[in-house]
Image 1 (cartoon, helix red, strand yellow):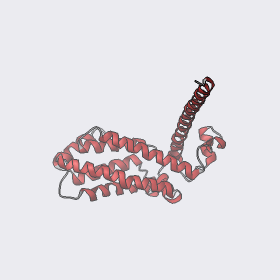
Image 2: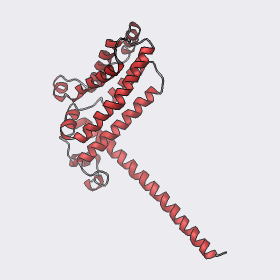
Image 3: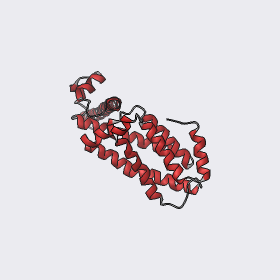
Image 4: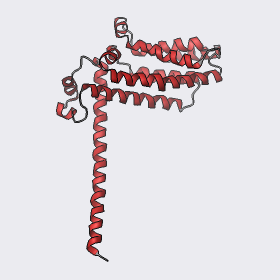
Length: 233
């Protein structure tokens, strides 16, 4: 048996193994740092909007250099898009988590509304407008999320509500689900929201009440009114 050859093979394998482990930890560390940057960017954009914030502002708020920031994103367009993608991913997980609880249809909608309203509690009214006008790729991510995942979630919720006799049955759930999500386009009307001093949370709750009061059975409406006594924006 060639001992030297065996030792060389073992050494090669060890080097390969260690390098893979190191790469894993480096990747995990970079991913964690990027996630932290995107979380901070979200907070900044929520407070000040998108258009008015520069990359210098972002670095100053985060306490990092532009060189560090550009290790993770290419430019402001990239930063906004990655921040939106992270937001969509978190919203997706929140909705799926609530759906997994197997609540009745109205409790499910209320829980989703409460969570989304809380996440958008300090949303600057200009964010949706800025995104739609100046960051079309990021806006497309939001539209795709709303037009597919959210519409499907509301559609399934509506079917369940009909089965539970909480919602009326003389309408098409596919159309109603689309109506529900389209009404949230109201968030993009920055001028109205700002001039009337209407928060994103208020918009979410008004949409919830408008939706359920339009399709709810007496049983469903009674349940809604009971829930509203304990939750307000």
